[in-house]
Image (cartoon, rainbow, N blue to C red; front, side, top):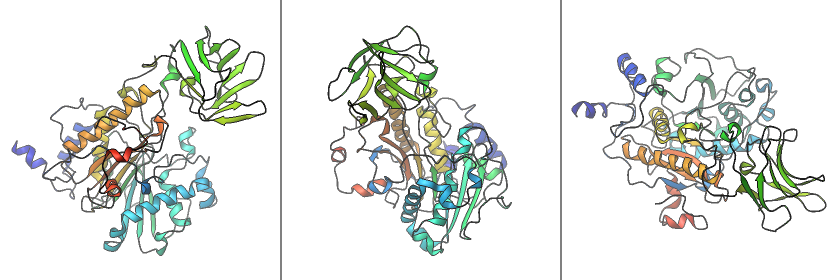
Length: 472
C-alpha cells in the first residue's frame, strides 16, 4: 500500500528513468494489457489530487461555445502539400478551423498573459506524407489546417504576441528529435511553429513523445485535440453474410412505397435487396446510393452514402414528387423487427477513427494517455476527443454510447490528477447517431469546464425537448 501511495505522488514534470519507462510501456502496451480490473491505477504522469471526481455527472450538453469546435467534416485534397496558398489548402473548412482557434484562444486567455506560447498536440492528426496511395493520405492533417487558419484568418492571435506550437501526431509519421528542423513546403509566420511527430494512440504517449526526444522533456500541452477521434464510421454490415428478413419503409405522408419489404433470394451488386410488390429496394454502385426502384422503370426514392445495408442509410432520402426528387427528412428505412441486427459486433470489435476499439477499457486507457501529456500547472488546459458520428442501428449506437459514458464514469472515479472528464451531448440533434460530440477533459472550475455554461440550472432542464441519453 505504501508503494502504491508513493507511485501516486510522483511529480509530473520530470520524465521517469529508463527502467520506469520500460515498466510503464509494458504495463500499458495494448498488445499485453489485460481486461480492465478493479485494481487499475492511472498512469504515473497524471498529477495526483486527494479526491477524484466520482460525483461529477458523466454527461454534459455541448455548450454553445464548443458547438463549432465539434463540427464534422474532413478536407480532402490530393497532393495537399502542393497547395499554392492557405485559402486553397483550407477550402470550405477555413471558418471551421478559425472557430477552433478562437475557442482555444478564449479558453487560454490567462495563458497569454502569463507566458508566451500555446502548445497544442493534435493526435490522430492525419498522415504527413500525401504521396501514400490510401484515402487517408489525401486528407489534410488537422494540425496543418490549424496552422494555416491561424496564418490566414482574422482573430486575436494576429497580434503576434503569442507563440503557437503545433504538433501533429499520427501513426505513420517519421520519428525525428525536436531540435531537428523539418522540411515543410510552406512559409508560416514566425510566431507559428509546426512539426509532425510519430504517435500511436494505442500506446503510452509519454514514452513515445519523450523517450524518442520528439518533444522537449519540459513540454506539456495546453491542448490535446483528437479531432473526429471518437468517430465510429466503420461498417460491419459490409462484411455480413446474413441480413434481416424484412425492413420497413416509413414516411410522414403515406405513399405507395411505404410498408414492409421482404429480402430477395439473391444479392444485387453484392448487397441485399428487398421487395414490396413492384418496388425493389437495392444498392446502386455506379451512383453510390440505396434506391427504391419501380420494376417498370424509374426511382421513387434514393439516399447517397456507401453503407452495407439500407437501414444504415442516413440520407436525407430524396423522394419523387411527380416532377422531381426532393429531400424528405421523414422518409426512413428501418429494421422491421426490434433488436440487434445480424452483423452487430461487440464494442471491442468496433474501431473508431483514432485507432482504438469501442469497449470501456480501451476508451479509458485513451483518456489517461491524453491526460498524461496535458500540463497540470495550466489550469485551463484541456483535451477534446471529438466524436463525428456513430454508424449503426439504434441498438448498436446505444451500446457504443453506453461504453463511452462508462469510460468517463470510471475515469472520474479512478483519476487522481487535476483533469475531470465529461461526455459532450448534442441535445439539439434529433438523429441518434449524431448526438455524441465526444469527451472533454478539463480542470473543474476552469475556463475549459463545460459546466460553467450551465451554472444554476437543474440537470434535467438541460435536456428539455431531448430525452435524457442515459439513466442518471
